[in-house]
Image 1 (tube, rainbow, N blue to C red):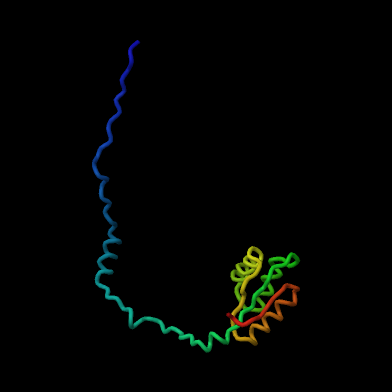
Image 2 (tube, rainbow, N blue to C red; image 1 turned 30 degrees about the vertical axis):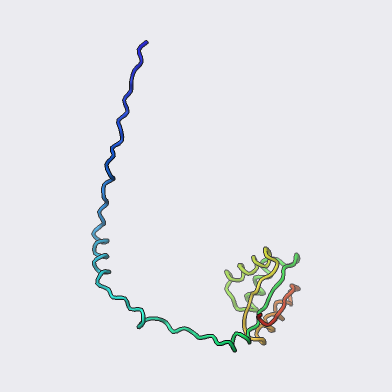
Length: 131
């Protein structure tokens, strides 16, 4: 029997060809080069939070139970804290998976009002000063 020898061509050791950018990319690069940074003139104003303001903040914490559904908790959170449906879902998920969640931070009167609305569906809620 004769054995056939099959020769496999060796790979070329050349570097891959350089990709040339499209004309639009070249134009963009040229136009960006001429721009100057404008950091100080266009920086938005930031609110300065004083220690006094932080000391007056309260928080509303909601605790998990086995009776309320996600929909009930989300609805009451949207009513009590004026949050979006997405934020209410995230908070309901945290309540369910972590056992509790801080759902609102504000002044004392607003937090007490939100806690009162949330407690109407039978879920445990606490309004307390932030520590």
